[in-house]
Amino acid sequence: MPATILHARRAVPAALTATAALLLLAAPAAAHVLGSGRIAGGLEAGFVHPIMGLDHVLAMLAVGMWGAQLGGRAIWVLPVCFPMVMAFGGALGVAGVPFPAVETGIGASVLILGGAIALALRPPVPVSAAIVGFLALFHGYAHGVELPDAADPVAFALGFVIATGLIHAAGILIGLVIRLPWGVRVLRGAGAAIGVAGIGLLTGLIVA
Amino acid sequence: MSRRNAVIAGAALCILGATPAAAHIVGPDSPLYDVLRHPVFEPTLAAVMIALGLWAGQQRSRTGWAMAAIFLVAVIAGAGAATFDVLPPLRPIAVASSMVVLGALAAARLQLPLWLAAALAAMAGIYQGAFGTLAHFQGGTGPYSIADLAVAAALLPVAGLQLVQRLQAGWMQVVFRVLGSWVAAAGILLLALLIRIR
Image (cartoon, rainbow over all chains, first blue to last red; front, side, top):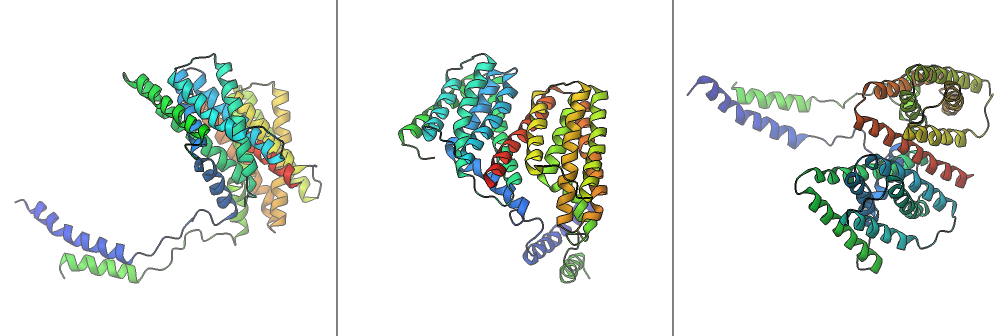
């Protein structure tokens, strides 16, 4: 057996022992713990907020997926349109402006967006943007009403919007499956599943 | 001593002799470091500067660079005026409005005439300067404020401008528009929160 291999074999147990010793004696790292500071606390609270509700997550995923399915300009128009109109809805909620049937609207948004993907609906981009924007109002309003007095409102708003945008991005990435030979069916199937979840949310069978 | 024992002994020495990590030695107690990091880690200031940079990058090259330069001058002017207690009205609301306007313009990739783009950059800069300087004086770090803001106002928008102008791939331009929409959306929410607080 070559000397280098023998050498390496001897070195492995020593390295493992040293690693074990380091691991056992290691103290917890305390650098940059998120959530303790004013800005980090606000950013974290805002970031987590949209992720906490299944209805919101499904709708935002569906926005990205539908954008990817429509392709062309829609792939960016929908994710650009949604957060801005959602924020406007949030502002209405913060201001306490009355808004009807918010929970129904949110459930319906999951059903409509999922249904649009399942049926592969292809309206003109302005129409799809208007649909997405209208549905975003319900989501924004619900978030706006629940907005806590965050440690840092700007960080909260940024965290909230970034999380929303990242879920859209995840939806777009899922939607890119359409480029694969079997992707069209998979995407439409996923849309149908989201639509069914929307029915569950509307009927109360699924609690977000 | 065998190699194995030497490794164990070395590891033990390292662990037993370890002292607390002393990175960030110029931490919160250092006024210079505090003001240098302020515009970068203060979301309002950073968001406006990033949005301005993105939008400037979407303009014609001459307009974009003019915007960045005018913004820098305006920030220094706003900060300088604030040190003499000359403050523009409605500062927080104006800064949130800057987020909305500049973010929306970047999202729309709207090209405006030089005079109008420059006017918007100047307006945003004056409020940035005043807002940032006021925060420093409240934190007792005022003397560093103008230099600090000037550095950030020179670096962040130019970084955004350069990114947009150099990364010409179609999907990158989409990313920049989406980033603009995020700033605008955060600005809308912030406006609502500010109005509620008032």
